[in-house]
Length: 96
Image (cartoon, rainbow, N blue to C red; front, side):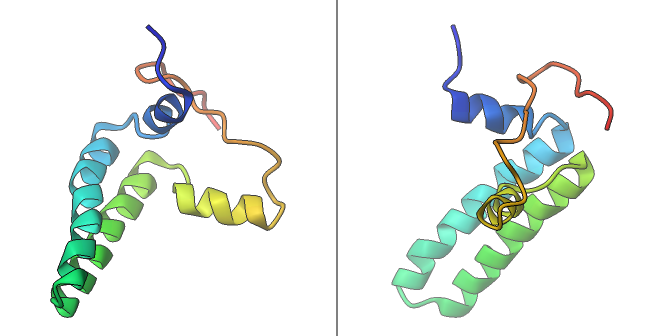
């Protein structure tokens, strides 16, 4: 069974267990910021949003690759010609 290409790409860029688990904490924290902002808990919403994103950026620093946002900015600026080549989950990453 083949994975959907965006999921395969995501899994390829999150192979390090530390990066993966920091994302498993950071993504829900970032998403939780939205309902907190809707109900008016602005300070808490900002805290969850910043902390969630910080965990994800730390994870990418540990893995040694760029975040999806950094790749998007580069692509919009014309510095990346195509999608980053991600290895399927579980396969060793080629040295840089």
